[in-house]
Image 1 (cartoon, one colour):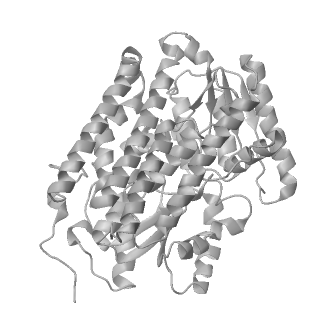
Image 2 (cartoon, rainbow, N blue to C red):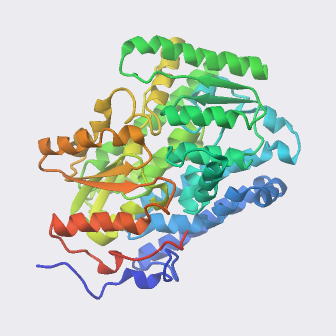
Length: 514
């Protein structure tokens, strides 16, 4: 019996050629009222953000092109909630509040310490990190504040506005740099060329993660910043125990550099206290995985991945909103499991997503669910970091921090040995998935070089469907969101012979939308 409903037309809710909704989604009385109430909470978070440094934030809006893109934050939130009801809606809103609170606090901190708007003590207490490093190593310096170099201008900003990074990508090509380099690194260089980084920090820590492109990007960015810097080169073959000694040496170099630059002493007790909080976050994350492997999971679609990325990049045990959200969502999950609630009633497949994603299509999981009934249970970023750090020995703890970095954003699947690129098969089986969507980032030469191995390995897993989908990570002009949808549509209709839940979502132009 066909489940295709020709009268179901979700696209009527949106303006033509955009993803911008004319009116809010109807979810039934209870869930619609709840959705409105949570929307008001997000408005409160944004109001609190402005209140933290109103003059500097308004000056930042006029100074920085990327900061204006955050005016699309409420639209971004709505895209993450599309099609969700019941416990799944509760979990997504709870995680989103933590994401909003964490990211807006971080932007406010950047504006407070921005020397463009006047020298102050805040700038002297900030240490700038590249986004592929979490803030754990700074746990031993309680008076200092970590600031991420490029996350707000690139990754997070692209979630808000798909056209944001193209300005910076065009800048690097006009500068004479190659157009086929990693978009993550290229966007960072473009921001530096346009002089769009705030003048933050007492020092900068860059690294060699995750690849050669990132290393070259670091060399170019450093020339545009006028603060002392340290290059922390972490082992690529992190599975080899012989590299642990070198990793530990790099962590000690960072501590010495920060101490020498700022005059602050490393506080071992404060460090261990912070690592205990980090471990609590990791423990909650792994408990969440247990629920994700069941038919009654309220964790799914877009926010689960975004929440973990936020936790890894910004917290490391230092953001109370992250752990509070974890405690609350686990309570929701426990109730859903106890009452055997099917939190995603449209689902007819379970999917794992792997590889470098199209950041301009962060809400792909919601589209998969609403159009085809494919529930994305987890994505690659959910498993990055997640290292429990020993707290009974300083050398062991520092080595644990290094291991967390070595398995960090865009690194776990690309380094440590090629076999880590194939981890998705075991993960898909662990989470009871019958489908894997493989992102093929056309500028990631390391992953593309092994695409044949990944496709060949599919023969060993006949019960799991593998869909390969190309993307250009930060540049929607090369491969649009609709191009990605068409790839999925072709597989679902030609290979699985299935019909969509909502045919209006199959093929549409939303290129003018944020």
